[in-house]
Image 1 (cartoon, rainbow, N blue to C red):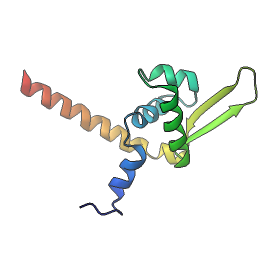
Image 2 (cartoon, rainbow, N blue to C red):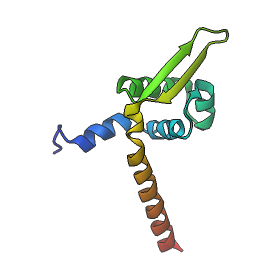
Image 3 (cartoon, rainbow, N blue to C red):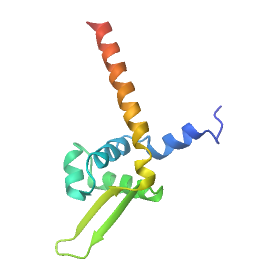
Length: 109
């Protein structure tokens, strides 16, 4: 049914899971974010899921991880240039979603 070479499906496979867009959105708002700060900003995410999503985003070179050799350990995350290239698309998706939300809720009222 779907063309496996479809760029939209490929992109959604990379960023389309429940937590990846909120992670990217939070990283967009701050230049550098520590792991625990990111965890606190994502209500309901588990450590396992956050780590899994961050690793997958790293594998696609959207997120950069920097680990400092300190006690206690310090790990920071930020968007790579490739990740930053996604920002106009995320902003467009945000605006589109905002419009759809308004339209859907106007119809109910």
